[in-house]
Image 1: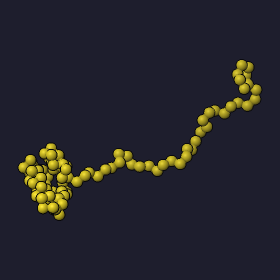
Image 2 (image 1 turned 120 degrees about the vertical axis):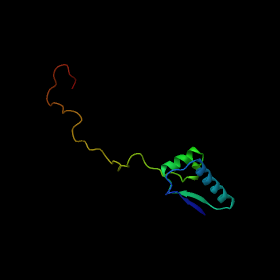
Image 3 (image 1 turned 60 degrees about the horizontal axis):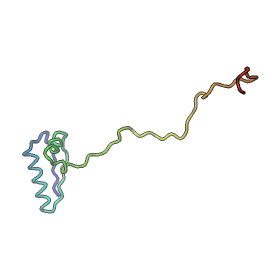
Length: 95
């Protein structure tokens, strides 16, 4: 297994990306697994720009919003309609 730790690398150019790709190719020819770890965003951008993003580990997925506890019911704090008047209705209004 070949593990390439790029945690100390802050920038890389096209020649460096090609060197990483050749290293991955040689590892594949010899039947060894090749992984890249510890890369910064600038290195990842350079590898994507040069067609080597397949060598980077898959990004971890995060939820856009924090998950909330599901509600189990609704609490009404006020009445939905005003109370109906008691007693006889004015003329013309249906009961």
